[in-house]
Length: 437
Image 1 (spheres, rainbow, N blue to C red):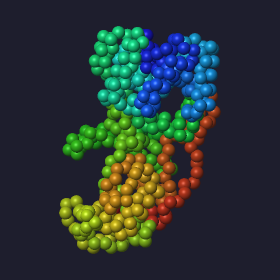
Image 2 (image 1 turned 90 degrees about the vertical axis):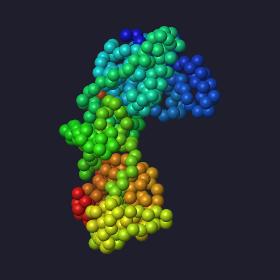
Image 3 (image 1 turned 90 degrees about the horizontal axis):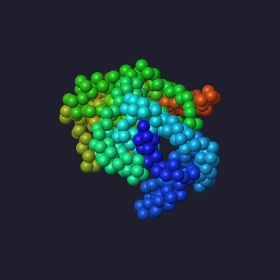
Image 4 (image 1 turned 30 degrees about the vertical axis):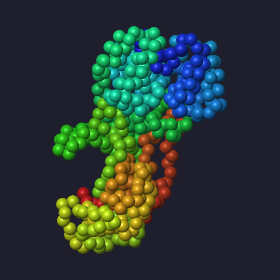
């Protein structure tokens, strides 16, 4: 139906049928809008320019690249009809959730072919090109409704639909598809798409990407999250979860960013930051061993005060003299706090960063008990260093990328991981951690 195509034209390029590749009126309008706002709030790229950028150019925001884009857009308009340009654009545009092209997006989000999309569904999909990952991550939020409303208003102003039609579409409740495959691989696919642009600055429009995922582990991890939340979620006041499995070579074998990808594309394995609590003590004890302590070093488990901070054990009980190994096994807060204060919390945070923690860490005494927020990726990478015997852990999800002809464009480099922690200390830490579980 025409409203599908009109939604994208209304959202991206209302004068598409009139211009010859570059829309000077849109450039003037965007310039004035951005000048009034004092920042970039509106762009002026036509659908033809966007297609040219996806087909031929790098994403660099330089004057030279923009000039090339404008020239090639004019060339494309002379070579192809408007319908041919639209067809190419709609078949290649990225619309989030690992969906390239309108057909893939319609089936991913709504479980139907583009020809069956309603006006409301079309407007929602047409809102994604501006920022596909961000807007697709918010399909069931008020922000998504705002974007849908914007597209419908643009269609009204362009004369594509009437105001009553727009109001009716805005009031329609969208029903999203329930695709089992997408639901258990979606977060990982989004993560992989983001990584493509890191390893290939100028990726071709058509690619074959081989991932490191093990689909059996992926599905098992998804089911474990669902079952865990179903049985324990209410008692523990948990409505979401995440899972991340990385082998000793750094290959991501499973990544689950939430209980239902189609309801929430927010990746809790890589984006959500939470206080790790006692799990962070691993870094404290690893730093202590590196500073000269041993698993048998004795410290007193007792109430302590560090400045104005008074850490206490869970349950309020204290054991007196304990070894570091015993303290870690029992997760004694006072001993971890003492150790951090003794060696310096800066050594703890420095080791955590070297182990792969990318979240911001502060040199506060309470960091020893996991007070700073980190991601699941941070913690999994950090523990992975010990699993590798002290060698650096570099997680990856893309094994190789080929173009449509089968030519190899990228292969994950096989390199020897540098040692970042002494092997004997890694063995001691693994022995200590084995007493925790």
